[in-house]
Length: 174
Image (cartoon, rainbow, N blue to C red; front, side, top):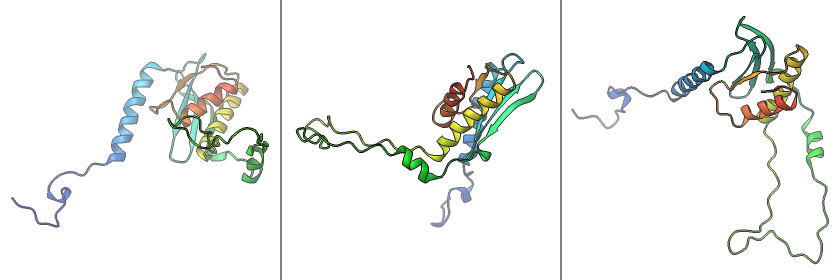
């Protein structure tokens, strides 16, 4: 059977894939695998992370009773104005020594060039760090010092790792 030139595959009887649904199902499958190994007890509750497109959420859960003991969200996090952060982040200008040549040009083998200034941290990363500190403070306030980290099926990378690092710096042990 021949198709008309305007027919697309999904009109011809094939099902169109929903990539976002597949990604979500994959994350949920990974989360279930993690949850088979990570359980929260009253002595060592579970620190669970959920990451949405713009925000990040963390909660400390006792799986024995099914209760949330502490939580933090980036929805309520406030930051100082951008101008104040830019003034703090700007490094002091250093006077170049007149006897040394510039190192901005790359050599023959691509080595020896000056590294550029570090990229500014994104708002999502700032939110993740703030939530990590907030969840640590909330947990310590309730007397919780050690937790089991549940990455929620996400890779331990980027925002999830930043939240975990900030929670550790805030006083949580995992």
